[in-house]
Length: 256
Image 1 (cartoon, helix red, strand yellow):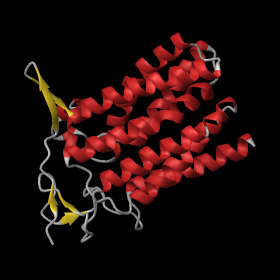
Image 2 (image 1 turned 30 degrees about the vertical axis):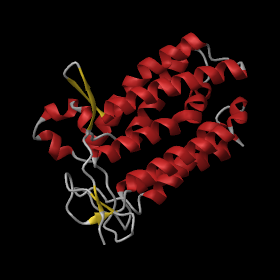
Image 3 (image 1 turned 90 degrees about the horizontal axis):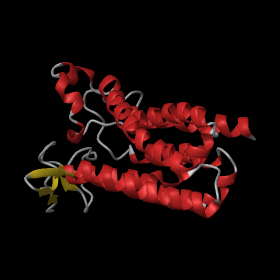
């Protein structure tokens, strides 16, 4: 059987001699699409979060998220690799980002910002949770274009070969699975329930559960991080997702 050999460039396009990686493009598009949708939701539902406050929240929150995403990956996924050359920490366009680190960054930033502007923590996170799937979808597509975070070896007819970062064994295109499930499907679910935006915390808790569950499922098809492997038959990502789901149950019961 002939399998598709992934040979896509990690560079989306060049402008004035500057190469624009898919990562940069996904970050840029995610930020502005989520910002636009969130501001529209604030206006549509007449939420107490002011547009000016939300603009500040998103701008500084975006960079906080990137910092936490990188540092989490450095410390918990691949510390030895970065200790060999600390400059790698700053090369975010080379990958090595953690969603769970980004989530912690959002939580930390939202906590301090909500205290500053005297608006409920949940008011911010519920809005972002409604549209976060868009950013996840675009981020996973960037992973696919980069040929990274590929799946486990497979003989499925749609399996692909990722020779740039892996070997010549056909693998599940798990980046696509993740884009469709924890990105697109998650967005559809969250958007369907945006009517609950007035019930503080409901959307945020729903996001924690559904992202955790969908990511947990996708991880069965994704190649585990080689420097970590499996822990009791589970990947590191699955362990973090279990924490997310347990946290969602705890918060749901507490707010019930």
